[in-house]
Length: 134
Ligand SMILES: CC(C)(COP(=O)(O)OP(=O)(O)OC[C@H]1O[C@@H](n2cnc3c(N)ncnc32)[C@H](O)[C@@H]1OP(=O)(O)O)[C@@H](O)C(=O)NCCC(=O)NCCS
Image (cartoon, helix red, strand yellow):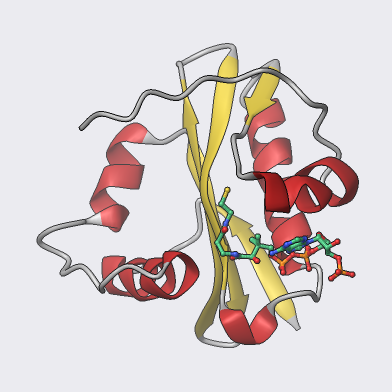
């Protein structure tokens, strides 16, 4: 059984391991990317999915302090994909943002994830922009 918790407990090491698996990066050290303390200080919330003791999924929810919230780093462990965990993570993120009084939840993503965000999670298409800071 997968459990979901808004602002649930997790360690930076768990998040760094999942991030490396989800996005093909190296595994950052806690001193380089301290997810646990950064999310506590800056995020509206986050969603932790667990399969027993294992981190099965994670989503970070950023915000402007009142109206807009943004999904970032939605990630599901490879072994648990296509079982609805990603959709549930996003649903809990939506509920958390709504409960905080936000009016909009934003996300941006690459084309191949359209079915996930539009069809499974219910997002409507919206224009977005991106500057690469190189
Ligand atoms: C994207 C991701 C979070 C989806 O998690 P998931 O738990 O597998 O998603 P769900 O099981 O809820 O998927 C529901 C539906 O969305 C669609 N979908 C899910 N992942 C998809 C993918 N990678 N490509 C295309 N469609 C996808 C499918 O239609 C899927 O239904 P199906 O399993 O019957 O085919 C997961 O693949 C992941 O962690 N990917 C790597 C990190 C990433 O790209 N995150 C998003 C950053 S914007």
